[in-house]
Amino acid sequence: MFAAMGIVLLVGIGLVVRPVRELVLGRSSITITKGASAPGVDDKFVAVMPLRVLGGDSGLQYEAAGVVDALSAKLVQMKNVHLSEPAAVEKINASDPVAKIAHQLGAKLIVQGTMQGAGDKIDAVLSLTDSTGRQLWTKDFPGVRQDLLTIEDQIYNELAAALELKPSTEELARTTLRPTENVAAYELDLKGRNIM
Image (cartoon, rainbow, N blue to C red; front, side, top):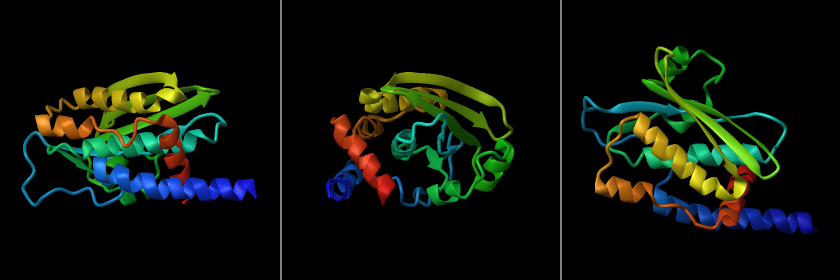
């Protein structure tokens, strides 16, 4: 009975928190295309791949998905960044060579990484690779689960620097917003999305 109530609670929280998150950060699961204007010289065509979870911690699956969602939600706020469709990314075999992935997604840059953890500690390693397979950037983001929102911010800031993005004041304001400051509520939202 308590398990059923817990699932109902997780789903209920997911139904409430997600619309607020989408209102604040924009929907990360909708079409990620921008206006009909022609791409600029400095535009970045990026695919954010799901993070590969290492080890046996099943709880990391939803946290890794949350990192990808948060990163995508922030990148899509940038006018010079064009993200590959999440539905298209889901169909890609992540073990394929980067050049093949880039070609299939129409991306010039691929963000990939891993996530692992033990107990309260987590570690995300992300990399940025161009369509030829040349690694442009890689960074390790160690931390604790209670700092997941901060780790997501660090990942975005470091990746934005690697992409040489120059956000406007408006873009900077949008990308610094968080769905919540309460990590426990955020974790429940991630778990609820994983159930749905």
